[in-house]
Image (cartoon, rainbow, N blue to C red; front, side):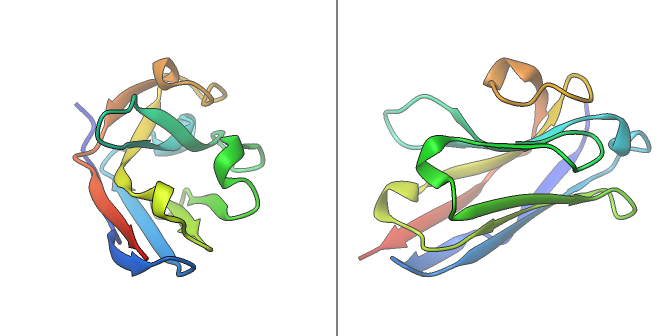
Length: 124
């Protein structure tokens, strides 16, 4: 088990911003890709954004491109998700996840560990 602790979720009006953070309690943090996944009621879990082990390659699902930014600080064992111009359809539980390897991060099956998740609710 890899402890992953998310923070930063909450209630925000449409058009607003939130920044999610995830701290991993693992020495080998920098060896693995990291990502943010979300699941809305009645929908399948999807990868919102992923980043490779070094932080120089990223992935975004189409619906968040240009609005969300994933980044990581390997010195702090932390991965971030900056969410701007939030929309009602972004409402979901967002979970931080650790990849099974250093470079695969675009599909849910690429991840082996997830945090408990943090609720993001966007209101009109």
